[in-house]
Length: 431
Ligand code: ASP
Image (cartoon, rainbow, N blue to C red; front, side, top):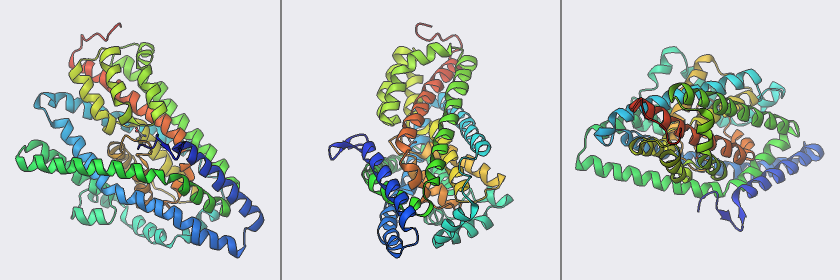
């Protein structure tokens, strides 16, 4: 059952919304009437926190196997049929460049608007200090992130140790290397290894599906904990977060995509959007690039007239690897929560976040909420309390719809651009 499916008769996202409202209202009431009472402290410590923590732990549990398997398979898919090598390289160049543009837009907008600021810094610091586990991590991370170390840390000394320590970027590097080697070396051994990796990936998707079913309860619990501490102000902050994400996604969708279509793909952006409409609508309503893939392929081949070998390759790979909206969202979310909790991030750290988000876009699964495990992990890497995820979960469904739309449209833009690069005199259908 996917996260779109009805759970217990009611769609999951409706349940999540109810969890959000119940948690927020109960938390605000508790904050107003019983802020310093012992029972409220007990309720938060022994009920709300553990429920939220279990959900977060389940997400963390999936990060390493998911990111590893998604990246290995992503790379192998690019290199598989030798005839597609050139298209593969072009697609890869497109993914990296356009995702980097998306994340940069997100980071600039979130730095300019600062949606996470506003609460007195002591409040954020107090929340931070109350989570001792993270306090240690912050100190460790701050020491780790300096100049050259930053670059050196990308290459793991011991990939298993990196996985154990949650050093995501090193795990990603290792996965990329494994993927490249498995592409170059086609033996029975590598083939059966890839079969196992595919199995691991499929299992992770199933597990995400199950974990997401718990989200409504986790949302209620995490929101209760936060609003009981902070009251109403936190909701204002959240509205600013939603506005920031939607603005940044709109810039990418309405400015960057049309420019690419017009000047690189040499096609009218208006015609492009008209023809892409079925895929755009499916993406918006399913919140899943993978679920939209059949529609994306149909649009690419039949409505945009993209040569089959290009469209099939770019869209299939793009459904898991080309996620402009997701990468942009990850960047904004990490910075928003850093601002919210009063964690200062240096320019070097923000550049690291940029790279992590580009890879995070590739490593996230194309299912509703697929980017949440990646975000949770990046938060921990930078000493930002992962509980912050609870804050954004309540509004995540809507943002997921918007970012998936950008993800899928990005795949179609990529198809147009690569098709044009392959045959400069290609004419899209009915252009
Ligand atoms: N729902 C997104 C997609 O399928 C992934 C995510 O950002 O959670 O494209």
